Length: 367
Image 1 (cartoon, rainbow, N blue to C red):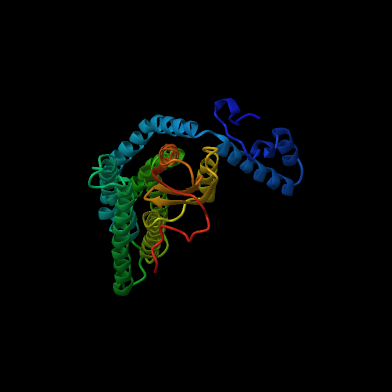
Image 2: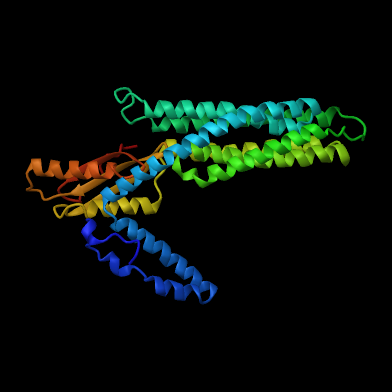
């Protein structure tokens, strides 16, 4: 079967998972039938991929992860540096457009643009700190620095957009008359140019968004800017051609939408920082690797995989023969720990050795 690692590459398949792989010709036959059969084919495709990952030796996972990181390093650097340079230029362009038109909608898009360079700088500083963290001072490493930086920036953006909503409310309360606002063509052209640049950056960062948490945040930021700039153009033009209240209303809608998006981002980053469990597929991968690591491992009692920032901490409880020499038990558990820590996205692994499974769960503080 193509795409599946062979036994000669170090595969361990004591559960005969290979026999559960559905051949490509059967998948093609299912896809050619009804829509329901097509959904079944997608399920088996996902299952084949999961079995492939389970059977792939740990050193292959590690090598592929290192190769992917090396191959994406330049692309990530380009994304960060080009976004930073573009955001500085576009901040000036959009600030001019907002001030010259005095449009709440353009100010709403301008605020996001003005703060983008600070976001890029904050992400760069957090990433630099995470890669240079002193392990004596930060034993768990610095990967959580990036998550903290993302949360801080999220709250800054929410606060700034809340101020814009207050300004829009003040305009509604103090405005008199039904005359429309003055139409400003040059500011609108400036914002259209900004929209086009952001669209190109969005496409680039979207293609490599899984390579780094930095690029993930940049992609989300460019996506937000596309909505903000596009809606600001329509709201400003509507306020000049249709009714004055369209402009402050549009600015409020943009600000509320940006607040909602950053609330979601902050919540997701907070769950990473708080230690939310990993996806089931990743937990099953670690479990399978632990249970097939050595014939001396009688059972795998417990496996926990949870976030510590963008990466994972793994806890594995294994059961060995009660009469096994201490040096042998140590070597097995140490080798297993080293192998699991070699998996992509794993920061630390802790392996606990026991001789039976009838005890109460360990490592849990009584409440």
